[in-house]
Image (cartoon, rainbow, N blue to C red):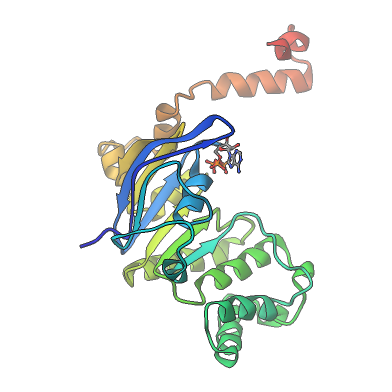
Length: 268
Ligand SMILES: Nc1ncnc2c1ncn2[C@@H]1O[C@H](COP(=O)(O)OP(=O)(O)OP(=O)(O)O)[C@@H](O)[C@H]1O
């Protein structure tokens, strides 16, 4: 079987800074892939490369076995993307925004509106369907972005912190939706800093550090079946971050004036 996404030796440099170095990984359809790493590790850059928004400096990207380039259009029809930043067209209503996207993907206008209203209804937003997005809360916007990314039934779905601002009940529904889409054979590429959600949802975890893969496997493989381990502690280990306790003490001491040398701490 072809991989749905395969990166071979990808390199990317921005302003003389090496952001991705020889990045290689492959993922199969019908899996949720947790894509994690510290701020600035290169996660969004990877997603932009796969979505063809930017070109790699070196290496190749294959989607469903086909070598792709940034200018290619065909494969993009099979991709859905839920961005982290909720930049939506504020003057549009939820229905207008989602049907606009659906029509861009070639869905007939009447069908697009019908499907949009049904999906908004399922996720509890039917009363706000014809309200402008300017009036929507962060979580409501996130749901609109999610529907907009899925309405054309994509095979490969990228989600960047998709649960931000969404209430606990709707989170449960969305997690189940992602599981069902995975069972339908979709590839779900899930990027998040919330380790317990990634640990719970992912069939495969890819950890990026300094532009290279630091770990790649199932959660059980990564923690070596250690019952006391967690993705959070593995993340701290692999990214070499052990001083959270000291950092917290230092911060609180500065705020409260509790440490004798608090005034000099920031001079480093
Ligand atoms: N267009 C760009 N021009 C210059 N530098 C860029 C550009 N895009 C990303 N970078 C740099 O590349 C590095 C990786 O950024 P990227 O957004 O991929 O990280 P990330 O892992 O998604 O981080 P976060 O978790 O904070 O979203 C950062 O140092 C960033 O400043």
